[in-house]
Image 1 (tube, rainbow, N blue to C red):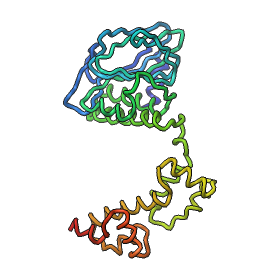
Image 2: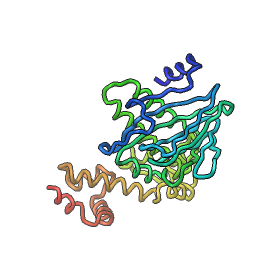
Image 3: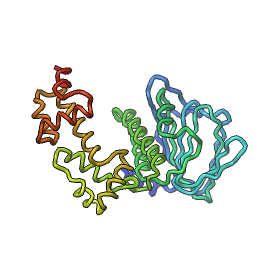
Image 4: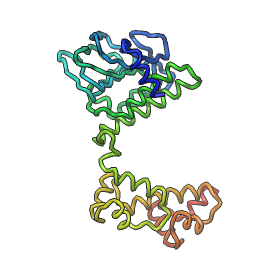
Length: 296
């Protein structure tokens, strides 16, 4: 699919604009208060031989997100014109005046999307994308791929295309919000890729007899440094993290299965059911036997 998209751009060099539409184009947008989130239009522009300007004095009724992946753009906010470089986002809220320009000599490339829905505002707020108009996130390949998928789906008119496009938008906003909140570098698995890999390993092997020293060695770290980095990423020590996973799994088994407390203890990694009961009570607040009775 993505290869087809790239080929289209190469074969049709005179075309500098590709878009996907959920509706016939409407300059002032479409507001949808029935759906949690809905994409109206999405597109890509690469300036080669001409410049482009937009001046919407009263803005639009939907949100617009612009992602500059090459060159730069010039955006006017109130009485100030701001040069916005590649790797930046610009977000316009409904009703916000829009005045911006791209120039061919800058080789500007942008992806853009117009979206609406009663949950859009809160989703952006939670992701930290409503505090200002311009954000620096770097050129994120995973976000570019999502834009391409959205354009492809909107143009396919296949069943459930709208639902898929909405899912891609949700993923994209989450990725952008995470980048802003964590400062992750492009292409990296967070600031601590070794710790992230170990977290995945712990979720897979939580019921085994995990040794903190062995986990640290897998990351080529001292035990002290491993614990410090792990707590920086998760907010808790490795052992507390393992215990949290075990207790959550124990609660599921106690409430959803016919397993006895002793059997649940063994499944989640405790050979001694009395020790399991003590840990469960200190974590959950009641003994596992009493917790199980609540769901019988």
